[in-house]
Every structure is written in C-alpha cells, then in structure tokens.
Image 1 (spheres, rainbow, N blue to C red):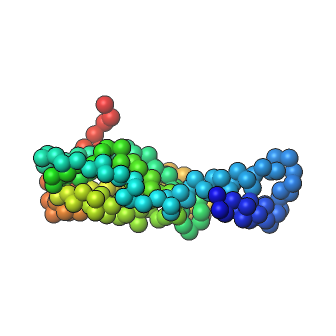
Image 2: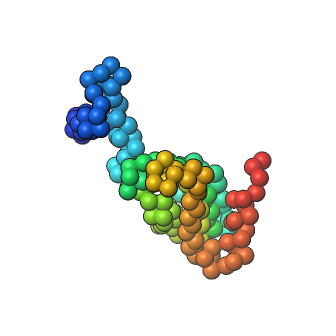
Image 3: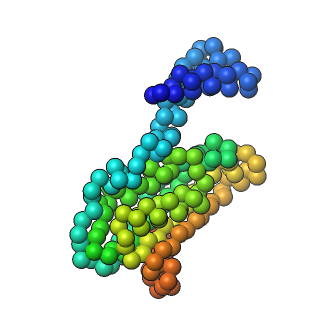
Length: 189
C-alpha cells in the first residue's frame, strides 16, 4: 500500500494528540492495523464499474421486476469519519438485459467503500445500474444507522436514516413503486 507508512505515522500522531502513549504495549501495533483498515475502508476509490460488472450482463427477454433486498452495507461518513451501516434494497425492470445478481452487492460495496453521505450513495448505486443496464426503471432504498448520530452529537441510538432513488417507471408509476415497496417490506422466507 503506497500510503501505509504515512497512515501509520498519522495514527501514531493522533494517538499522542488525544493523550495516549502510542508506545505502550496495547497500542504498539495499532498504527499498522489502522493503516490496513483504511486500505480496506477506502478500496472503492480504486475500483471501477466496468471491472466490477466484468461483462456479467446477459440478454434476457424478461420484463418483470427484479428485486435484491437486504444487502448489507457499511460506509464511513465524510463529515466525521465514523461508520454508518445498514441494508440496501435494489429493484430494476429489465429492458432486454439482466445483470448477474452478485454484481449488485459488489456495486453497492464499490461506492460504500468511499467517504460518503447516504443520500449520495443511494443515487450513485441507482445511476450505476441505470448506466450499465439501461433498464426501464431502477429503485434503491437504503436504511442506515449512523454512528455520528448515535455515539456523538444528538446521541440517538435508535435512529435510522432512509433514503431512496426512483428512476424510470419507478418514478412514473405509483403502482410499480408500490409493488417494489411491498416486495422489500414483506417478511423474510
């Protein structure tokens, strides 16, 4: 990792600045661990949509809604560098093409593993699916728990942020949107 040593030094300095002794036994390896963690947390910056999709788009005559729900995500709030995490629900209406189902969580992760706000993340996922598939509609609903609200500031531990993006038929048709909302809210099997 090109920034590993620099991140280690920054973490060492941070520990000193908050009043810790970075040379005590429990913290000796913390700067290296933090540097490795940041490599993982920010790997989305080094990923590209074309590589994630990897030509896993298939011709299919289906015109019915495809829904992948309860896809877990985690990200880091760009305002406080604290985690937020939750579930993403994705729906699209094919227009002659479908995507390999495993690519949907990979797309979510690519954008989530960048500094984010949930509102932008929701739109980025929708736009990516729209770009690669050109479907008749895309719907994204994200539900997230934000540590910046739960462990600092207002300290509301039970708060949940919900964001949505509706494109194409999901935006135009209340009936289509309601079908999607029903499918993502029904009990698990």
